[in-house]
Image (cartoon, rainbow, N blue to C red; front, side, top):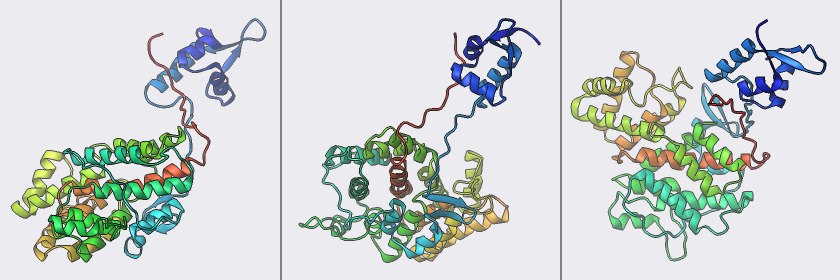
Length: 395
C-alpha cells in the first residue's frame, strides 16, 4: 500500500463532494482503510488517482445518469412506434395533425390557425424558423402558461404560424387560396399548406400525400439531442416557445434537414451528370453517400420505404428514373442502405422543391415530437437534470 490521504484530500482529487466519496466506498468503487487513530478513514492515493484518470478519460467515475422513462416513441428494427403504433403505418392512414394529437395525448384544436405576425425579413431559412418561434412567443397570450391544454393550443398555433411565414413558391394568386379568410378560418391541412408553399406545382394531391407521409415518419425519433435539450428546458420550466427554440438551436448543421439537403444535391447532380459521376463526387468530397446509412437501422431504414412509394406518384418518370438509378448503383456497390433523409430528398427532387424544404419539413415534423417531450417532462420533478461534474482543472 502506497501513500495514504484523508477523505477531504481524496474528494478534492476526484473533484467530488464528501457525500459522493462515501457513496463510492459503499458501492465498492473505492476502498477505505482505517487510520491509526480512531474514527478516521484513509484512502490509497494510487487508487484515487486511477479513478480520477478514468474520469478524465471520459468515463464517469460515478454513475449520475438519469434514466428517462418515456411513453412517446419506441425505436425498433421495424421503425419508430408512436404510443405503440408503427409510424410507417400511420404515414398512410393518418394526417400529421392526427399524429400530433396522438403524440400529445390530446384532442388537438381544429383549424390550426396561425398567429398574425409582421412580414418576415430576408434571412436564411434556418433563421426564419427561429424568427417565427421567437415572434410567436412574443405575440402569444400568456406564453408562460404551462397547463397541458394551453401548451397544445400554443403548439397548433406555432406550427401553423411557421408554415404561414414561409416564402411562397407558387404564384401569389394560388398561394393565398390556402391561407386565411376574413373569419380567420384556415383552409387545408398543414401538409396542404406546406406543399403549396414549397412545391413549384402547388398543392397537388399526390404532393400533399407525400409531404404528409414525410411529416408523420419524421415527427419523433426518441431521445435525440434536440429532444433531450427540450426536456432539459422543460425541467427548468422554461416557456413552451423558449423550449422549442432550444430544440431548433440544438439541431446542428449535420441534422436531418441538412442531410436531406445534401441528398437533394446528389440527385440534382445525378440528373445532370449521371448517377455514377454524382455518387463518385459525393464519396470523394464527403466520404459518405448523403442520405444513406443510419446506425439505428443497420438493415435499412423502414421510414425510407414509407416515402419511396410516394416518389413515383409525385414526379415525372424521368425524375423517378434518376432516383432509381442512384438506388440501384448504391445497392450494386453494397453501400449503406438509404435512410429517411434520402426518401425526403427524393420527394423534394420529384416535386421540384428547393433544397431548404428538407430543413423546413423536418423541423415542423420534429416540433410535434418535441412538444410531446415537453409535455411529458412537465410531469417530472423540476430541475432533475443535474449531472455530477468531475473537476479536473487547476486547484
